[in-house]
Length: 292
Image: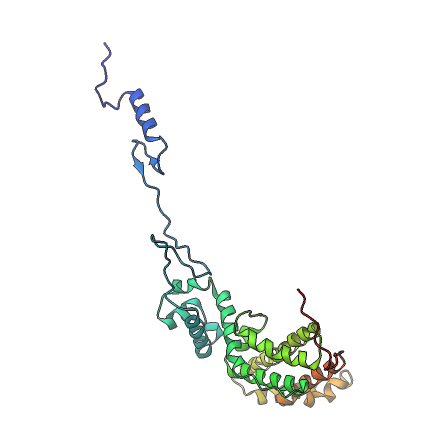
């Protein structure tokens, strides 16, 4: 004779099916288990903090403020850059300068590349404080601007490595480009030429400084004085066979003369000479209206 299962006896297949069905009913996010109990879904522990710095909302709708301000982040990054150099710059080293943990920086930047964008603009902001006065003569003004920029890059460690190839678009960049574009507009250059001149002059100066700050040989990198190294290069060039390389041998001393300022002057003045050939509007004619 078949035994009737007692109430609650889980050995009966029908009761097990009923229990499973009960546990699988839709509810507010519950997840059924083998015994039909509901479990709350796990919450991600990752914080939704991105570049905007808005942070994560509190239950009352307000948002947490970043532990580090953007200005403090830039100043700390520039401090690390000047003291330790670009190779030592990292999210962690900047966080240590601020006495916070690296994730605190993610309110403002996601990685080192975005940090470098901020530092590039911060460097230009510092350079804007040293802009030379204008004299109403575009050639004099551009010459002084180029020399001033060169001095700035040489005085601020690894600044040229940060700036080369980057186009900052923040408040530090604005007064620097405005200064140069105003000089060119006053001189009568059209907007497209002025934009190209601005690009070319910046590249001329930064490229020159980058070159003069790099070790020209392994010997210089190892600590040999640059004058001694350049003299050795001149001796090597002069020893080439003159019948095969007559022009190279003849110019050996001129190629290796340690007159870096004279070289910069020559390159800059030839750049400015070239601008004379560009068309310019008369001073009595107003500049063209900006495109809509």
